[in-house]
Structure formats: C-alpha cells, structure tokens
Length: 114
Length: 112
Image (cartoon, helix red, strand yellow):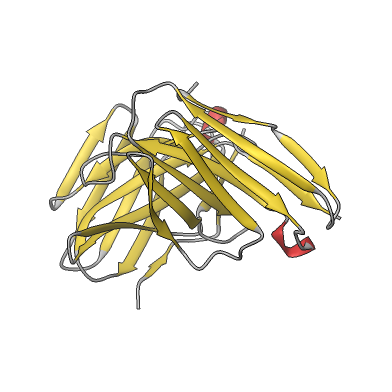
C-alpha cells in the first residue's frame, strides 16, 4: 500500500461513452499527477495539480479532462476516447511540486477503449 | 532533447547479482530516481541519487556519475520477488520548474 488509491482498477469503454477515473491520496500531499503508461514506453505526464491548482497540461487532448476538488482527490473525466487511448493510467502524489520529494503512485486503472 | 536509455529486458538467476544501467542526456540535471514496478501494481520508490557515488540500501544499491550521464541499479542475492520492471527517472530544474523525465523501464526476469 502506497497511500494512493485508484478506482476503478479496470475499465472497458466504447468510444462514445463518458467515464471518470478517481484517485485519492491519504498522505497529506499537496501535489497530484496523472500519467499515462503504455507498453514499453516511458511514463507520459498528463496533468499536474499543486495546491489544487493545475500547473501543467502536457498537450493532452481535450477528450481528457482533469478535476481536482481538493488536495486529496483527483479525477480524470473521459469522453469520446480513441482505441489508442487504451493504456494504464497512473495517479501519483508528492509533498509538493518542488524538488527533493519522490512521488507515490497508485496501482493504476487499466483502460481499454473498444 | 531530453533522453533516457535503459535496456528493455534482462534475465538473471536467483541468488545472483544483476546491474541495470541507465544513461541520460538532459539539461538541468537535479537528481535521479529508481522505481520498481511489479506487473499490475504501482511503481514504488527505490532510491534517489543527486551526488556522484554509490548509495546502498540493503540488497539494492544505486550509483551515479553526473559527468558521464550514467547510473546503475545493482541488485544482490536476487530473489524471485525481484522480478519486476525497474524505472529510471531524471529530475531536471529549468527556469525554476522541476520536471521528471522517465525511461521506458527494464523488465527483469529472475529464473530459478
């Protein structure tokens, strides 16, 4: 247990569906992250929130929409996804966005887009 | 550009020693992390190096040479549970912004 939980663990959706991924951290951290992990590729940083404010959006398509209602919760809203969006989506948190702090990861949501 | 290279896959024998290498070409180097990720699980933090030299933590050690842009993770007395992917990540600091640049990971297979 890393102190970061994600639900659901597995999700299968059609291209016209709308779904949301949820992340919760119990570590008192102030920074939260969404990553995409595809097979044999480096982790791709998607979004960063620091003290509930979005500080980074790494050219992510608008069909992915993040939401951070408070420092403990992070959502990723999905709509009209493409099959190439199938991947493992990892949430992480750290003390803050500054240096010197490792990131703690959740177990991920395995997403399959049909 | 920013780039990290590590082998895609390695195989080792239970009880042996294995070294996983990571080379990087980045600007604004500010530290290097190693993470372990078992299949279907979260990546977990193993080590952090910011100065040259060897950091030892039980069966695992991590080495850094900043002048060579090179790090390795050394695993001793291998156990079957060490079968996992090992991710190298470099933190950079540019214009007061920290970034983490990730390698694609090395899948380590331990055989009896």
